[in-house]
Image (cartoon, rainbow, N blue to C red; front, side, top):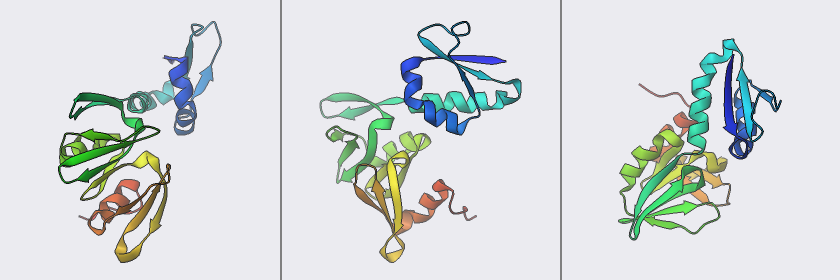
Length: 174
């Protein structure tokens, strides 16, 4: 048996996501877990899920430093809705905060953020896939994305296949 102990506040933020994705038991038995912690117990046959679980927990709270005109901004990735380029200026649009000007090329941001559910959807946009509410077909084989904050972004034609592949709704062509 494997036991994982996590901070109660951190776990409560991601509890539903973990319980839905992994077949886990949660215990709050004071004999098993310190009072200020929550314990996860995996059966021996679930050991292969441990790596995926730890990776999911880490990605949920991951932060990066982004260069700005004034210095560096440390931002939890889960707060980024999308990134938008206007010429040489890159704007990071955030949940419940004002947008931030980032001094880093979009292609570099694309590579940095790709492992964390971010995807390029056009020449000027990178979107956080976890912030998409609806995907609708649009004119000229494009897709319209409605984000959870109500923003609409367009997946341009040249990015539609990769977008669908990332979502698992289209197979990659060889």
